[in-house]
Length: 477
Picture (cartoon, rainbow, N blue to C red):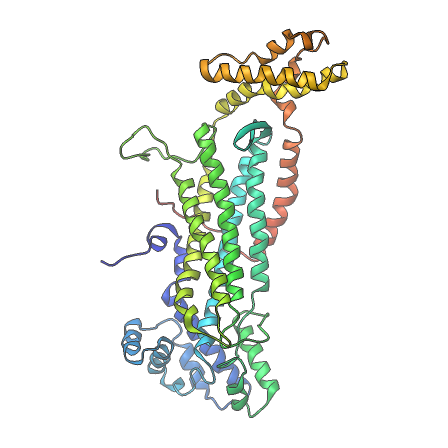
């Protein structure tokens, strides 16, 4: 047995693993060679038809063992594959890779894979949004504590909080869609990007060289092509894609971190299966392991983004090879990890447990403090001094906080304030409606409705136009 990456063995989904597999990559190389030879023949080069037919017959049957033998001798992976294809398709041997450089297949194949990876991730983002949307709709008006500095602030609703998570993923969807729409193909540019070899092949005919670039790119599904390149396309495009994945990871980490905090409070809990074990030593534990894994993988993807910018910055002149080994690791792993994160996020959102009694208890414990703002306003309207009343509220609030925390005393803040001479003299006491949590959530329920009825459908339509629905994927607990 040899080491296996946890991303492929444990975390990422089968579709994303298949996308970045070696056979898929080499299948794309062969399709690129087919597109090149077809287009060169269409534009007048004397290439026999059976050469094209021969390549088309061997797009997906690469003998990797034979390639390994050839690479051991040639010490060049692309040349090893050229020779291997030539052995399988002898009629095409003389024309394979004609005028091209290695980056023709390596770079262009990577761009196809990145585009397909972005589309797959868009489908997963849609699944997360739908799952969180159900939570938001179901709990649109359920009051809960809102926190600033992780201290109770005012009230919001569980549904409103879910829309905050959703909005982060909507921003990611916009960025991923932008990357899919603007991704540029390297195309057919030659050794240092000047297209000199192709100009020689077409006897100095610039128009046919330009047409070759457009035709090959079109056959591979691209309408946007880099107008100029060195030997490779700009590595800034890689960095931009990796930055989009890092943004996705950040959104998931925000969702996961909030959930970890709320699970500690007992308000929201991630799914926990009937026979799931929370701890090998402490059988009573129910740990937020899915959310913790999301946070862990997100940290990995976020850090990869910086790698992309470093690679972009360090390219020398028309090319340097210090990007190659790095990109083989960084780009697939970023996609695999982002995929794993979204699989987890969908699983968590779909199985989220909302403990309404706990939420209500926390609201009830805090509501007297929240009601003091209204008492203050009414006291001022009744002729009281705002600063004096503020000091009275502050003093009683601190005393009640200490009594409830240290002695488990009941929260009698409103009773204390009603008995205080400053408020008693003004005839200001708490009214029953001032202890109704629904009176403190503002427009949160209506904001949820607006988000789910207008924002969400629009982004889902945009995603559906380019990405099929993501299938369910297993979460290995």
